[in-house]
Structure formats: structure tokens, C-alpha cells
Image (tube, rainbow, N blue to C red):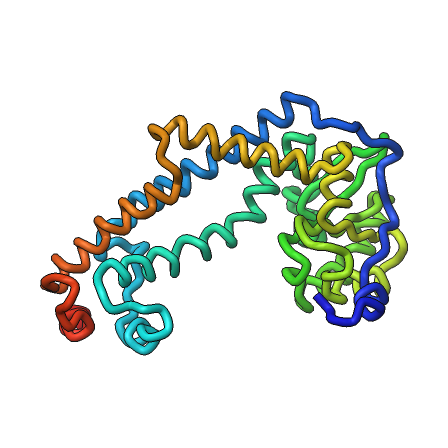
Length: 282
């Protein structure tokens, strides 16, 4: 986010497209679908956590040079702390990488966001590479390219969009929305404005709240999604005997710590751990 509010507003993409009207509340079946999809995400991540209990796992990356160099920064001086580092090096990165696809494939389809036929047709697939999904809003077909956050879109993305959008618009006459899942207009980089400047007024950018309202047709839809996520967390705890996800994470961490001890012949917390790990890693 830019420090100068005037500069931030100057580079913020304007809101140039919106629905004619919005529902005041999200229909119950859509709320339920979001909660269930989120519960599924939590269960899939739990499955990944429970598989990361062995240092021999392909999901446990042990770089002894890096881990030792950063041990004072991250307090990696015991098998439990090494297990924590291994978990945190893998899991949050995977979550962040999967987030955009999760929304695109699991959440937005609840609101009839779908894959355009042209995207998979051989004679149009190349020029349509910048288009991710389509939706019908107020009787109009709207094409969409979707990005996770306000800084996800880079120069390469912008160049590809500017190159492909004119041909897509000429063939379809459709408006195109660059949709950014979270953030505010004033926190977006200059790439969406760059694309609009090189294409035309048929390209729009919707960020955060504006995108969710446009897709769902519900006022303050992001708040309804928040409530659905909280509901999914509650259902997860009930489904797993009252345990939170974090409790499962700690249980898996303890098992992984024991695997560190077994694999590298470490005894207790006070053993010079790094010498054992270095000797056992080569």
C-alpha cells in the first residue's frame, strides 16, 4: 500500500462496472456451500499435516546449511523446533499457492462462475490464455481474469493481457473484468491501469469487496464469506472430536520431532543437534 493517500488514489483502478442491484443477504444454500467447501479445504490441509511426520517424506525439506545459518533467527536448536521450522516452511507456502485456485474452482462456481468454452477450444485457446472464467451478470456475459492479491499481477501478466484482450473483445464484444480477491483499490499496483490504457474501456478492475459483490450479487458478500469460514472452523472441531486444527498440527509436530531424533540419532533436547543432522544429511 502506498504511503501517500493522494498517490494511492491516483493509481487506484476506478470502479467502472457493477451490478444493477444487490441482495441484502446471501441465500442460505450458497452460504452452506461456502462453509462446506471451506471445511473440505481444512480437511485436505489436515491430511497434508498428518502426512508430514517423517523426515523421509518428500514434503519435509531439510536444508542443513540454511537451517543452521538461520537457527538463531528462528530458534532452531531442538528436534521440536526443527520440526516446527519444517512444517512452517512447507504448509503456509502451500496454502498461499492453493488459495487462488481454491476460490476459482470451489467458491466462485457456487455463483455460476464457469469456464468459457473458447478457453479449451484448440483454435482459440492461445489468445484466451489470459481469460480464466466467465459469468452472466444482468443478462450480460462478462469475461474474467482472476488474481489473488493486489500485488499478484506482474509485468508479464499485464503484457499478455494487453496483447490478448483486444482479440477476445473483438470476437465476443464482452467486457473483461480483472478480479482481485482481496485488498483495496488503493493497494493495487499499476498493472491493471496499464492494461486498461493499452486496451480500452471494456476492461475493468474489481478489487476485494467490489469483486465479491459483483460475483455473488450480495451486498457486503465478504462478510458473509467470513461467517461461512467461521462456521466451517466450528464444524471442523466437531468433526474431529473437539480438537482445533492447531492441536492436530502440534501432534504431528511431536511425531516429526521424534522422527528427527530417530533419523539423526539425537538424544534429548540438549544434544548438539546440528552436528548430528549434518552428519546424517550427507
